[in-house]
Length: 399
Image 1 (cartoon, rainbow, N blue to C red):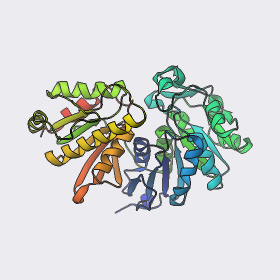
Image 2 (image 1 turned 45 degrees about the vertical axis):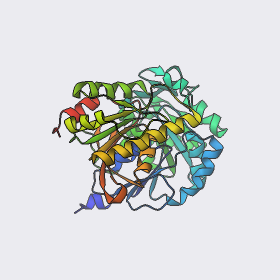
Image 3 (image 1 turned 30 degrees about the horizontal axis):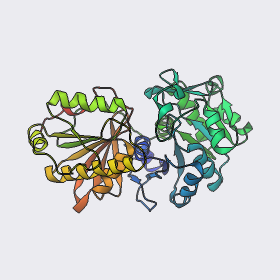
Image 4 (image 1 turned 180 degrees about the vertical axis):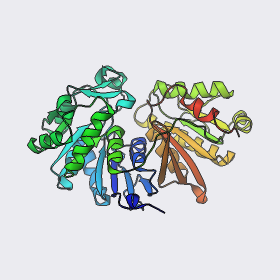
């Protein structure tokens, strides 16, 4: 049974523009005995905490805001707008539309995620101290990040330059932040360098609930803690094997993580591309029988347009076939679009996040084709140390 504090926790809705972002944000509000649901089609879902994946990351701002109209009626309780921690996507245009639709006073943009190396100093987003536009995200094929100044990105999407909360103002405390919001004209960008900075921002937002929080999983975690949610992040403690691993991300970190694991357990990763048969090679079936793992990978080169769509379909079909043929217990997927394609191929319509098995790695449950219950571990492309999969699948019980 839920205790009084858990029963009194408010309803929460996270609105995200991709699936892995929805999961690694909404899971911050899990772990309290409340039902958490993630959906990617605009339909009613049961749950005290909802994540609505609008799949608008790659849309132009005008298209993205138009798409939100189908999702706004599903919002319940406190609304949190998840933005990409590297400034990709039409997040500011969407936040502005949500403020209008929900008749809120303004939007506070706080993309910092210190535990993942993302900080905002003097209004600029830095990745491990480097301005984001000077990192690999500056050459992102779908949404290249050309500007590191958060205010400039917001202004380009909304037509209005937001105010700026300096690090000194943030460290002045929640009351001072709330008063600064009162003096602003409807939007503000906040500096943040540490988790303590995010905590002060969260406290201020709870004092000014008419303001829309717009941030990464970092600010969401601070809000969840301040609201009384009991989420905890664990270190990889070992997952029972019986998993199909699918790496659809072209991010080098994700590929290194998979290759480190496959070398250690002595299996080959199967590269799947458009036109490749979905039938699992005999060598992979034999490897699964021996190790309880099979790994599918996209080609290393980035694909765009129709080719990228064909690749997602090929990976999804191969993963679905592998799950069914091997009677797998779970799937591990890197990349939001790949995860969504795999879930659709398995006829999954909703995920129920349970916990983070490591920072940025979310364990969820799904009901797949024919009512089979399936574990799903998801990871955004750039997250995790190189040995994270090794620790996840080699420190627990073997098959």
